[in-house]
Length: 336
Image (cartoon, rainbow, N blue to C red; front, side, top):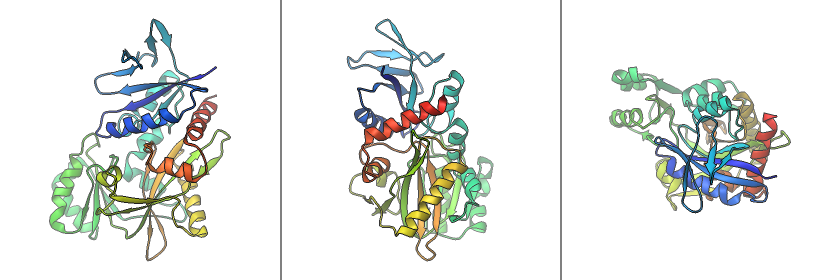
């Protein structure tokens, strides 16, 4: 019998547009012989499914069920492809835990924690071979003294970014002190990011992004890394989603020792944060020291055809549909 999969997408933030593109690609790759897939849109106003005929059915939030053509439809699993809130910050995961529906992503606790970049860095700080840039975490109550705190504790240049944002929204690279106040306001005011701001000293080096997942056999699988080279000041929202601004090299040109070291670090991060399913870790390789510096972890990484994870899955020699099936089957097994 086919598994009934709720492909959950949309969301409450500006990342919803990317979520729809990601979920459409996942939907196109899933094996229809094994899975019945129902896209479910989560928006501030409503949760709903639209069938091929354009008929809209509202989700019953009591049990995440649908009524289609008079028949009650319940799901075996939720495949969460929803970037930002409420899919990436643990809110949906907590809801699914409460109603007993398995899902493909990290737990509610891990998801909520990893949306907070500052807290995540604190937990990962002592992992062997991993380095973290010096940083300052500011809260809404720090607004009036924010610039002074940063200038007293950090050296230029630095990155200013919302502590709980995604897709580099609200992020600025500050090279001169005169740019700081505007950058802080931009980060504090970013929509649905918790009004916390993380400022980090800039690390000079090559930038990489690399996926890791737990397969249906329970094994941790590290995917090939992608090196990011952008014509922008840094890998911002435009660089991520406007073609031609960024060169992405998969697999990245890393030595065998660097590849092995990166794999050890990724596995340690995955275990330390109690991750599930697929995650993606972004990091710098500092030029002077050859040290890997942690940037952030993404627990629901983009899945458009040009996104990092699909690139890495293909470089690994795996079909995207088989990869997504592994995530589904692993989630179902872990729930038993």
